[in-house]
Length: 149
Image (cartoon, rainbow, N blue to C red; front, side, top):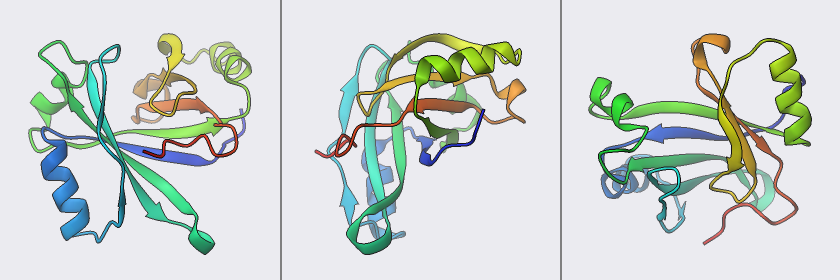
């Protein structure tokens, strides 16, 4: 498996509104996308763009807030009430090939491959198999397909 581009860092938060205020006021973020619900994953999501070279964006911050009591990130927030880094996400050119490679290495995949917040297929690899870091693997979005609302 070859390391692909770091697409985003997932940050769990009890309040996307409070996190947006932080990224604007403290970090000077200029490009913050409109939050949206992902009921199939039990979360509300908001992307914050970091600046990149020559007018492009760099790595994104993905703010994730639980939608309800059944949200899979509630356990994380119980242990970390202020929120914090939840996962990192790397791009791969072919999600099926990447999944097969991780499985062949004996890495534990958490759940099925599904469509993520960027509209591309994703899966997660267990933190115990990734040096303690929950790792999202995401098929590289097609040109111009990064979330842009």
